[in-house]
Image (tube, rainbow, N blue to C red):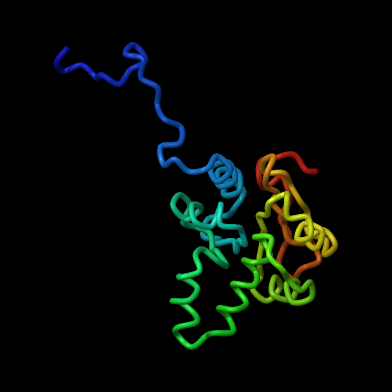
Length: 168
């Protein structure tokens, strides 16, 4: 019928939940993560490619240590900040399952004031380092864990409940 809204349940229309076609983990992380934040805060995140390339598409109020290698090169290396580019790439290698030096990764997490790390559960060495340094892990999915910075850091610690999930 002309003049009648066609997108109704009567016409079997079902609204898309994930119109952006982002991974479900990105959606669930962003929704629960950002709910616990105060307006105007930009948490610093370290995450693997599965998140870094899509997280920014939906959520603008996060600071990513690494999003794409070309961005790191353009923003840092080609502007005379080679050391910072190398450090950011080293942190990306850490969460992506690459080789890493425990002492330097721990120092870089502090240096860049990383609030939270998203990491694949298959990356056992990186998960073990974070747990050894008192980071608190919260399951995000069957494949990923979110690690919250330790309470002993100079920045106020956030709780697992900030993610809208039960504490471990």
